Amino acid sequence: MNKSTYAKSGVDIFKEEEAIKSLLSSIKTKRSGIGKSLGGHYAGLIEFGEYALVLCTDGVGSKVEIANAMRKWDTVGIDCIAMNVNDAICVGAEPIAFVDYLAIEDPKPEITKEIGKGLEVGANLANVSIVGGETASLPEIINGFDLAGTCLGYVKKKDIVIGDKITPGDIIIGLSSSGIHSNGYTLVRYVLKNANLNYQNEFPSGYYPGKKIGEVLLTPTNIYVKETLELFKKVKVHGIAHITGGGLRNLNRLNNKVKFVIDNQLEPQPIFNFLQKIGNIEDKEMYQTFNMGMGLAIIVSEKDAKDSVNLLKKYSTANCKIVGKITEGKGVEFPDLGLNY
Image 1 (cartoon, one colour):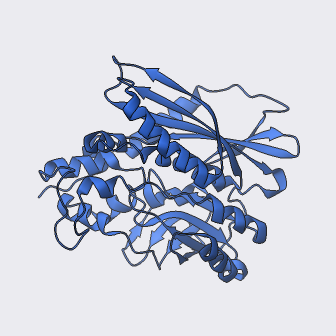
Image 2 (cartoon, helix red, strand yellow):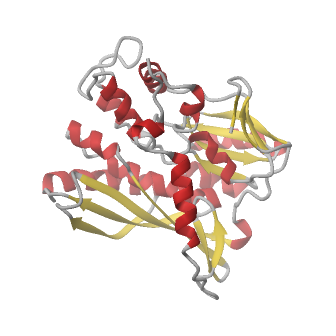
């Protein structure tokens, strides 16, 4: 059986990284004063006096194809909010406002109403105001719909979390995902198609009894705002990574001068084992495409690790535990799996 990869399904993450570098090479304009760029990674930081404003943007991706196939659109709005607010907290910010962008082939009210329900749930969970948006009818461009958004947040400059404080000896805390979240769905759809499975099929025994494949794939992305903001009040956080496109390689975005060693990982949900088995996907590909059970990673000092875990467990619905540590070196390592990124 041929091995499935993200690139074979149509998404080459390394080509995408080169394309982003090329895009950024054309952008030269730099504002001074209020609005000056202060850097960032998952979200951009902007000069605003005592504070930094924070902006980030993201979408739901091809997960919307599954929503269309299942005729179930009431959760993708949660994903849209989650993908953005979870990025905003990675620089220490509190998300406060959101705008959405819905590009749609045919703006049917029965679809847009359901999308709105998810946006409302997500906004409530993240405690953000949806202050506007745009709906574009694009029948010649869009097949179905695409949903994206932009989040505004803020943080006092002295409280910015950028990853530069991460040092060997620090501890990595993992918060569990709800499943695939909103990344890697092009590979998911490719694997299912090659296995002659559709979203209405029930899972084989041992996975999700009585559940349809499409139902599980539409499980919305966890929102980690509440517990993270509570942690900011009590602990000096050194770094936060939202595990999205690129999988666990994302940790490298925080600090490329240390090594992130994951030696006590959270248990991946059964959906990952199912996809790996039917798609014949190698471990290395799985961990650089999917979150593999960990939606958020938080790095704190060793002395703050126990208190941080206890506090996160108090406020979070996600499972939470110490999953690894920071050592000398570079990259991300999974010693138990023999993986290095």
